[in-house]
Length: 91
Figure 1 (spheres, rainbow, N blue to C red):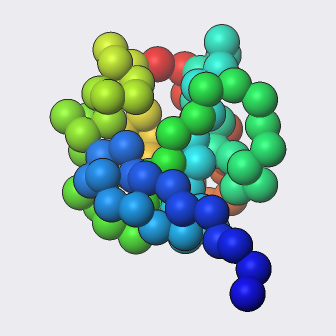
Figure 2: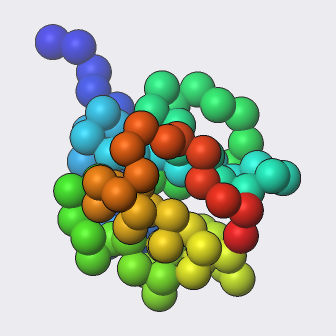
């Protein structure tokens, strides 16, 4: 049996297999969605299927003062308004 890495959602603190979570990377230019999990930079994981995890207050642990911008970008992207865009605006 192959080892499956577990990661914790920064918002709800639930542990899930890495493949089930969405990695968000904080870069100098803003936030990037990292579906491959290989981009350099500080990253955090959020549940893509739980809208409560996209709330500003829950994202402050990771994004600090930029949590509102990240929350809005996640709502737009995961809510289906953005289509396939993987670049999130700067916070």
